[in-house]
Image 1 (tube, one colour):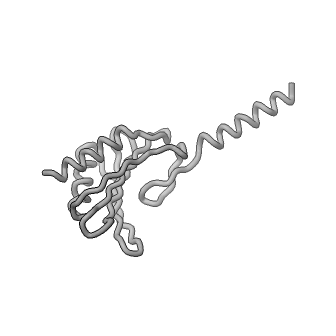
Image 2 (image 1 turned 30 degrees about the horizontal axis):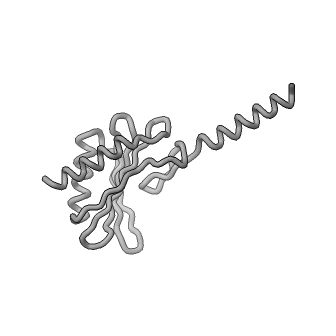
Image 3 (image 1 turned 60 degrees about the vertical axis):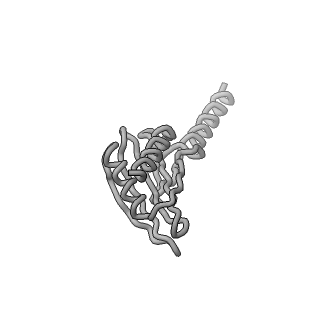
Length: 134
C-alpha cells in the first residue's frame, strides 16, 4: 500500500513538472505557462518597419489595450515589441527588419492559465496585414 502511494506521488510530481513551467515571451521576459506548445505565428511584408509597427499598434488598440512598447537593440537590427491585452489574453507582437525591404512580424498569444490561443494570434496577424493595405 505504501509503495503504491509513493508511486502515485512521484507520478503526480513528474506530471506537475512537465505540465507547468515558464515560457519565453517575445520581449525577452519569462511568464508562467505550458511549455513546448506553439503559441505564435509569423508574417513577412514588403513594407518599412515603421509602417508595420504602426499597423500592429493600431490593431492591438482596436482589439484591446496596449500595455507596453519596447525597443530591443540587437547587434544589427532594432527590434520593436508591443505588449497588450486582447480578450483577457496576453499578446506580444515583435516587429523586426529582415532586410531593407522585408519586415517580419511575430504574434504570440497566451491565455491567463498559460495556454496558447493560435486562433487569436492568426486573427491579429491577419488584421495587421489588412491594416497595411489601407
